[in-house]
Image (tube, rainbow, N blue to C red; front, side):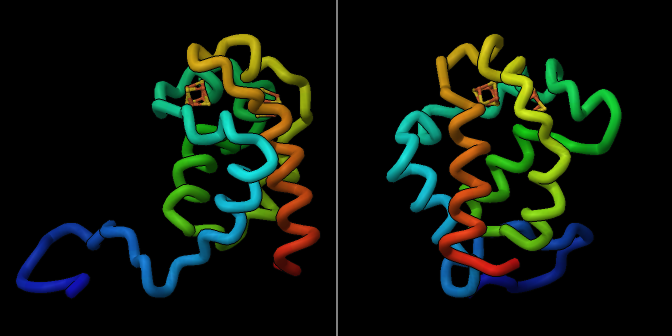
Length: 112
Ligand code: SF4
Ligand code: SF4
C-alpha cells in the first residue's frame, strides 16, 4: 500500500512496482562504484554545468537509484564531462564513467 491517509506533502515512497531500475542496474554492472554514493553533494557543489544550468548530479544519481528516469536524457545532456566531480568525490566514485554509462544505458536499454 503506497498511499494511505491524509498528508499535506506528496508521497515520495519508491514505487517498486512501476519505477524503472534498468538504468541503475546497467550502471552498477559496468561501474560498480556507483553504489558507493553517500549523497554528500560535493559533486553538485563543484559541477561546471551546475554553475550555468539547473543540472544536479547528486539528485540525478538519487533519482536513477529510485528508478525515476523521466527526462533523464535531457538532464544528462547538460554534463560537459569535465571530470571535476570525480576529483572531489570523497568516496572515490568514477563519476565520469558513471555519466558515460548513463548515456550508454539510455542508448542500449531505452529510447527515451
Ligand atoms: S561527491 Fe561522490 S559521494 Fe558525494 S554525492 Fe557526489 S557521487 Fe555521491
Ligand atoms: S563531469 Fe559533468 S557532472 Fe561532473 S563536474 Fe563536469 S559537468 Fe558536472
